[in-house]
Length: 392
Image (cartoon, rainbow, N blue to C red):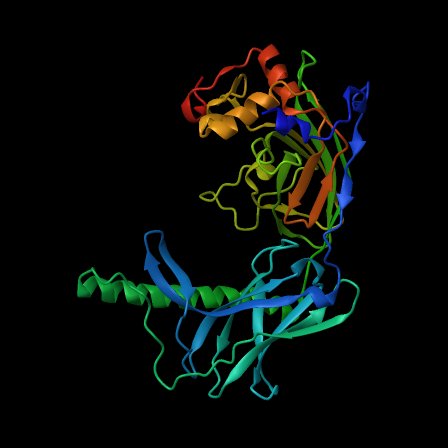
């Protein structure tokens, strides 16, 4: 296993700062910043169905029926450069037929899913999206498929065939009502932009720094990540973190990841717009689980996130830790890699992704997993129960 350790960057112990002061994370460019990078990836007419998880929608595999109204779904690639988007139906020759009223599925900067509804025209048509990028440059993309509407009634909802006929009829009626209610809800949402132009919210990510996460006994247990977020408009926003030591060896990278154990947000955001007494969102674990919260425009929110390696577990009361080494016993290779990590003091850079915010960065050489492993053992961490059982 010495081969794995030799391929790691050899910076030496002097790479660590003596006072462990907070350091800025170097931002990495996404590589996509122009209108030419926008791609119209998919467009689907949706059909209600009933599955194990309950009522939902799936792609209509056949051609849509002329004159019928459908829920529709579109997806763009290169979403991070899109400042605005408008969807339309056009004839085979490019003449505008119908403005589509669409809504973005969430406020993510890099997920390009849109939902809306459309009444199918009589003749062949395509779907076009147009708008401007972040630099104000226009783009226009036509989805490749030419739709040819059928002159027959729409296909009924998908219902499990093994059910008795009376029950299938009842569920089919329920699914049609579910479809109509979903479209009604979308009508309320898209009324915010009657001209069909969807203006993307923007999020400013700034002051991203990292430092050791230390215990009261001064043991290094992981990384503390700090950053600020400011939103252009009020709304529900969610994000999560992906942080891991960036080993050059592909077989080593990904074995250890950093996970959120504590988080603090100042000022405190509000529950998401859809929260009710029956739909509760824990505002203390937003980043850990990537949950929505309501953030106000122009307010700077300060995040302080403590991360520990994924070979560590915490009890339900958050008073004790355990070390879970059994997860590395899935194969001889991962076991050997882990054993090599436990004895390597070579500093390593960490990759940091703020998911849904179109932000990624890299640290300077930082403490390797060995330091955190030893820190938790000094804290008295015991061996974890199977599957990181939190009852200890």
